[in-house]
Picture 1: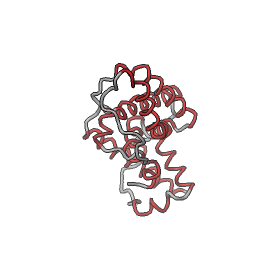
Picture 2: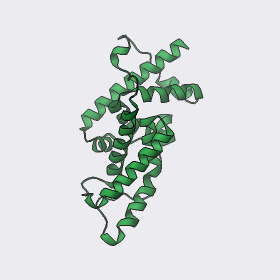
Picture 3: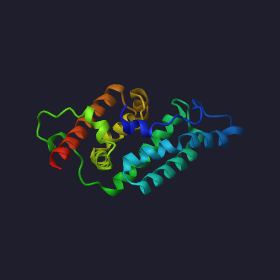
Picture 4: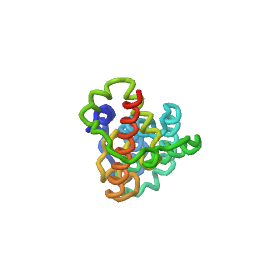
Length: 195
């Protein structure tokens, strides 16, 4: 697990809910679920939007949407998975409204050997400059790659959890994660060579 993932990984405060609570406890159960995951939802939204203001708005939109649809929550997924999915959607809506400039693609870089930076990454990410480059690289990834990378490497979720949130197969999550890591690795490598 990377230093970035360790810094963002927090244990859940409440036990997750697999089915909607009884009517008399709905409000309390909803509040407990939100309280238990609020920091994580904000972290995901921040990594997707790249903006604290947009992240706060996205989480607020997600919580409002979740509350409005709480009665329709069928319990086919865990409450946390459901909240993550709503938050990811709200964050992506914010990003799409801003029309981000460009995304990193494989064609942006010449094909070739990429230096192994895994040993140096732990040391380098402690430096504020490289951390900023890493954050910038994450925001330059396409939405699908960025969300997958954030859920797996920043939030530390499993492939199965990420697949459930993104409504994808685990194989698709692993493929997206690989592509995101390769692009991010090349982006950082190019930065280090040119600084």
